[in-house]
Image (cartoon, rainbow, N blue to C red; front, side):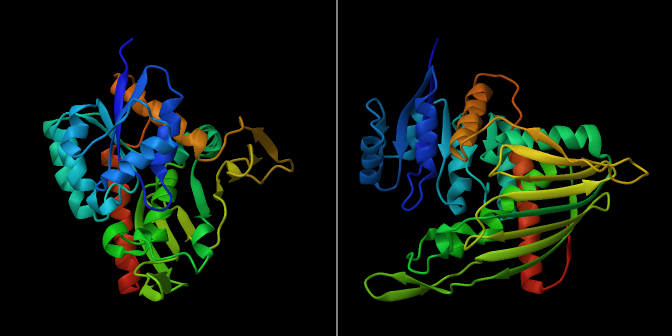
Length: 350
């Protein structure tokens, strides 16, 4: 069988999402990681050596990478996604772009218009969609919930809680957009829409930068330009009330609660189960929680493997459930409105 040829653009200067992709692709049959492109050629060469990629070429230009592949995985900062995406569409290559798709919604029209001319397979890396718990949540909501009343999600990370971590691109608003709002908020908005079926119509957002200065150079300090923590409240088109709390300086898991006509569902991605307390549509809650087991997964590693497998299958013409660019642009529109809300300090209609 002919191998599907993949290229990766962007190898990372701090935490490299490209590493997860390279490791995932290495486990797949009939898939070849044929090229790596980074604006720093030596980083590409180092990435290839670190991952023992014997048959992978360090490309000197993006165009060289596009000439050697069937599809590309874009792992660069989001502010340069648009250029790389448009060139890949023009070259008729399949695209998996890491989230968020762009840093401003205004770029979305350029991407969607290009896809109308050349409809290549496209997806954005919302890997939480491939969590067994999220998939079980989606099924349970469709089968049992009925009308949703409330949704609450908390998500974040611990690494940047260390104030001695130097200034990096994630703290540069020009490169990354907003901080926790973009990084973690994009994920939770995708889950609210994909798993819970909520279409947000109004958003209110408050952001805070807790560690305002970061080390840079030998003894210097640089001002952090985006948020460490964000609180979003939102209203869905069916009257659902949503609250999302995001932080890159202290939350260590993804946790979710959703309730409605059919009961209450709770989950944490630390666990291999979800808890469901049933409720009669017009009555009260039952007395016993039903624990629904899910197959164990290694966070990020297994999710990105499943995501990348969907990318390969999409390239091969199979029907796969992914977040396409149109859906990702819907998420970006909400992120832009949330940013507007945080600046104007008022609720914004979508």
